[in-house]
Image (cartoon, rainbow, N blue to C red; front, side, top):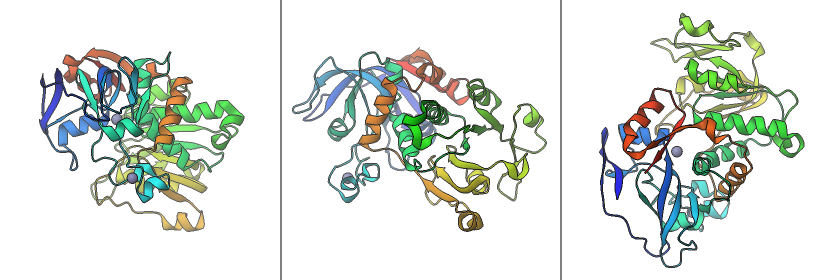
Length: 372
Ligand SMILES: [Zn+2]
Ligand SMILES: [Zn+2]
């Protein structure tokens, strides 16, 4: 079979490898589509401290069961999608419902979907593999992994009622947050925990073409300019912030509307430390800042302790997801909560992986579906 193998940073090749055979509890899936994701791009460029090379990229997929190992509760022909982690189910974290923090959940993650076939490890089969409901498209089903992490993030702040929301970042995660929050607002009573009369959702980012995506779908947008003299900084109404960069100090976000812009919920999807440091100041009294994006080990951000104490601003985080979040995400996808066609811009044959990666990196596509 063909697989997009990375032998080291910047060393990628689509080549013939042996088709894996499923052992006990494992499942071999024939890949229908696999979506590009920033995680794969990062792995291809820089590698990952915990994932050794060589490795086959790709982890957001929809497929068909080709063969099931002994004891795996799946049958050939079933259409499936999957979570990527395999929590143990028996450690303290797992027993407390924090399977996302299980120390061994990533020992054998699901990886290798940019290929004709994908082997799903035993623990992932047990806790993460899901049958795709009839009527759900391959592309939409393949969004299960990123959407589950968004579901988890929203669950972490469900007690935060009402008020405006700021989403920092303009990628697929930001888009899924936007669609879910907007959906909850519309659903009214059923989504009560997140809704609020007139709740405004503001998306902040650097790339104008990405901000347009959100503007066209009803979000307010804010441009984070790379410098105060950035000619594009004034191009997009309604503009809320500008981010000045300074060689000696971290970038500064300033509200164009002075003290007026206060958010009850702020999600950071960028992992940009300079930006993160400024977020508590943008939170309303009693508001919450949630750090969603991955950060390098040892990352530190200065926190406005004054805001934390005198204005009861909370700073929290969310990492990955639990099997419960996966079920919730699949139900949301089946219910049409996420317009997959807005997130997956196009289909390309697997052989065109280079062009697909390029489209995503240039910001010309949110996600591309690679078809083996
Ligand atoms: Zn991903
Ligand atoms: Zn565990």
